[in-house]
Structures are given as C-alpha cells and as structure tokens.
Image 1 (tube, helix red, strand yellow):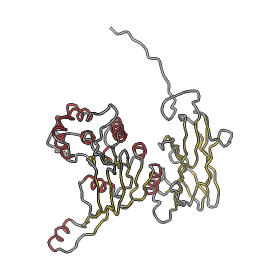
Image 2: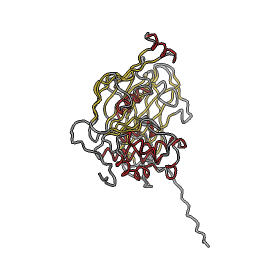
Image 3: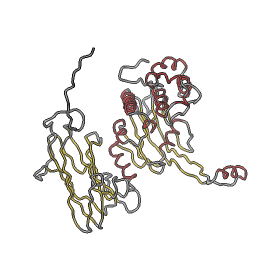
Image 4: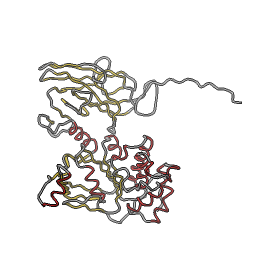
Length: 419
C-alpha cells in the first residue's frame, strides 16, 4: 500500500464498527509488604497480600479517525490500561474487542535486545508488532530514515540514549500500519524538533482514518491531537468528553478539588477551589478603565479582578490567556512577579494587571486564579477558567507571525570580501 506525501496508510478491515471497544474492564494487583511474603504465601497457601484495584469497571469505544486522550494523576491507572489494550497484561474481568492491528509505544526499549544493533532490532521489534518479514524489508529504509539515527543504526542498542531508543521505537510502531496507534509519555523524551515530527505523523495517521489512544501529561499535546479525552482517577473514569473540559477536570484533580473542604460550582468544572478567598468578578478594560471586549494588537489592556475573603490570607493572584484552540499563550501571577498580596477577612479587594495586547488577531479567553504558592496545584482557593473573553481585531504598528509579538532589533549585516 503506497502512502500519499502527507498521510499514513491505514489498513481497512471492511468493518464499520469501532476499532477498539473496552467493556467493564477491571484489573487487580497483589501487593506484598515484603518479597518474602510472596514465597510464604506460595508455600503455606495462606493469604499474605492485599489487592490493589488499578482499573475499576472501565468502558469506552474508539472509532475510525478518532483520537482519544487519557489524562490522570500518577497512579490513576493509565499505564495499566495501555498494557491491557496492547496485550502486555490480561484483564481480571471485562472484555477488550480489537478490530484490526493495534501497535503502540508504551515504554522505552520494550521488545529491544540491548546486545543487537538498531537495524537488527527493527526486524525483531517489528515482528512482535505483527509485521511480516516482507513488510519489514519493504519499509526498512523508511523506518531508518524516520528514526534519524544515521550511522548509529548499526551500533548496539545498549549504547543508545533514551531519546535514540524512543526514536527507533516510534519509527517502527508508526510504520506497522496499525488501525489503532497507542502512545504514552515516551514522546516526552527527545528534542523538541523530533517531538513535533512525531506529533505531525500522529495527526497525519488520524486524518487518514486511523484511531489514536494518546496518554500524556502534556495538556497542549492532548488538545492538539485529540478529539476527545478521558480523565482517570483511582482506576475509574472521572470524565469523558471534549479535551478542553477534560483538561479542566484534570486540573481539578491535581489541585486536590476532589478532597473534603473543596467545592465545585454545580455542573461547572471551570470554577473550583476551597473558595475561602474567591474571585467574584473579572473585567477587561482599556487605559481609561472602560470595559473593552476588543483591542488592537499592541494596545494597552488591563485584567481587573474583584476578590472577597472569608479569612485573612496572603495569596498569589494570577491570570492565564488562552487562544481559541485552548493553547496557553501567556500567564503570570503575583508570586512570579515578586509581588505580595494580602486579603482581609470580610473585605472586598480589587486587583489590576496591566499589559499590552501583544497577541495575534483572534479570540482569547482569560482564566484567573488564587492560590498560596506560584502554582494553583497546591492549596487552590479559586480557579476560574475562561472567566472573561476578548478579541484582538487587527495588527497594530508591526505585523508578525505566530501568537505573540516580541520586540526585535535587526542590524544590517556587514559584507566582507572573500579571497
């Protein structure tokens, strides 16, 4: 099967059903306090372990051309889910229905023999992914070219860095022509250019009709790649829906809003925290203090917050600007600005951030937060996503490419005669 310049070929099994169906999946692990307890249990047949439920009644489907992100804190069950789907582990109960070849890159070096060269490992690892010898021969040059390992391809894998192992593993997996591609945090390894190359290849695969299961802590990558996202918590599906909403539910979890004493506005994952100190209003104004929903690029603007406190508190106040795709464009807070802000009980305070609207034309949202440290992850009093919106209607004095304007100086190059 030949590939177009921009698309990755996806085998067609002729079925119109989902490529992957997960039904009531459960997985337990035995936890022993000491290694010797495992042997004692085998000899005496007396229970010396406790059960840890890594996955509890997980169900979802993944269709053609669909990309599903999986988010969750460490220990939420993400890696266990991927290993079950890839066949590395077997479920204790439930069912996994696979419609076509599923390949993935789960852990660096999985299936590689450190004594063999990278070239020899291509054949070995590709066969583990279900590729035939003819397929390997036909795609060898493309795999090696994508990996960009050069002369190192004939060196033993034990001499490779983690980034080189990831390059080779990804190159093999994406050329196996799967119907579903499973990838996790392995892509966090390697230089930025190769990560961008991998993400582009993943998007091309999705656009060609392939299904993607993408596990990452990189919220931006999930928003770029995925059309839907799951949030796992304690082995269960905490949320299943659009990536933006999934990201907010994920932020809820890492900020601890599932714990006692934290509140969430009814049916609204965009506003949460202890609410002991809370933001009651957000306004965008011009230099005259007038409400302004629209600015020209470079025009002065201000983010004004109204805050109420139940108790005396010293907190960090911050804001984050996102574009229409949900990508973080710019954010800061008073901790990063080295400003100290104190709030008094039963008082209303007003804060103001002034900045130039140095953003490309388009629509933006403003998220605001109150927390004790330089991040809302710890002791979040209030996080309010998309509390206000504004539009940059056009360029000011200086057009540019990208998302933000950065002042640039240029000096004419001097010419020197070359002998």
